[in-house]
Length: 480
Image 1 (spheres, helix red, strand yellow):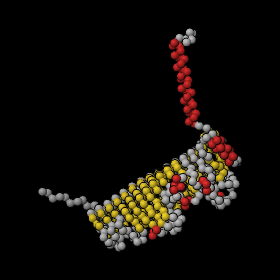
Image 2 (cartoon, rainbow, N blue to C red):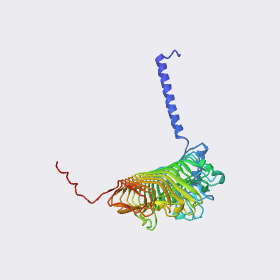
Image 3 (tube, rainbow, N blue to C red):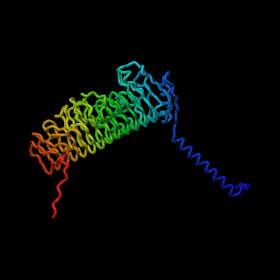
Image 4 (tube, one colour):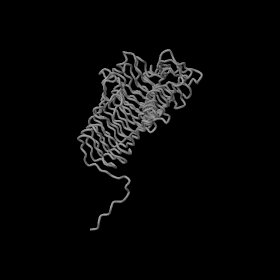
């Protein structure tokens, strides 16, 4: 011990040193949390931003990942000789300053027929994972340039050797995305191979597209192809040709709390998708939709390929599906394409939704190749009809229509066989069981006029007829 210092002085000195070390450690932890940051100032509308952006991305990727932080202003992209302008690499976050940071493909770009990715996640042969795109504005200028497909933020693996690789942990959030053929998504070439075990094992994982404003697309606004684990949530989607889609065996994906305004279809559950949850969405046609367009708010469908397909284990709850704009007024439909060998739609649960148009529990395209199986349609509000077809037109089994409020004026007609139609409230009409329908269980429903039964072996029990226009109070019980 230094004889010039008292024990108290030594204690104070040690406390001071300890405090300094703690502060230094905290600062080091914060620095590590921030990671490697490459700031990039906006070149402005007169200069191309291609080189400065790619150099910043490459620098962050070379350090094992980091943030490319874009300043406010214009980042004009030009069309390169390949199929992309810039490529986001693994571990890179591309972050702007909100709406003020604007990336866009030069609108004077000459058209060409090939698909083009101004901002691409990975390449045809090298996937990128652990990528974030956030807090910026992007304009594809697809409508102005034309001649091809100008994409948004997409990963696509096209090289044959890359089709058994995956692009994982990708997040696109808090962005404004305008005029892209597709705003966000991932895909692979040769998608018809998706049912093979090798492709199933190589699905991309944990894609999240959340809290974005998306305006105008010519295809699917958000498309998850061959994805295992994903989230499409809290997006405002406007003027989409077709809204969010899961396809080619995608599974374990939630489509949640999106506002979707479309010109063709709203939410698409397609080709082999399974274990999908659709909740809290609002899907409705654009006011400018052509009246002759079918304009389906929710569609289950196959692709035009010679495959035996299955779409299964889908839960739809708490959604609003609207279509009062087109002449078809169709809110739900199944479509097995003519090229498909067959499709079975199994294990679908519809609960607590609002449908203000017709619900078509049928396929009008190739019903002989379509099967509905294990369908629960319960506790929904339906303004339109619930449509079915005879069993010799389309196979269906274990279909339960239960506890719904059916507000269509007049009769709903049950043409299928072997269904359970129970505990529904026909608030302004009744149920008709068509000639040829057989072995249906119809019980405990409330209708305004008696149920008409022209079917065979129908079990009718416990149904109640009420007069909704009768406002007279019930008679008093006589005095005893």
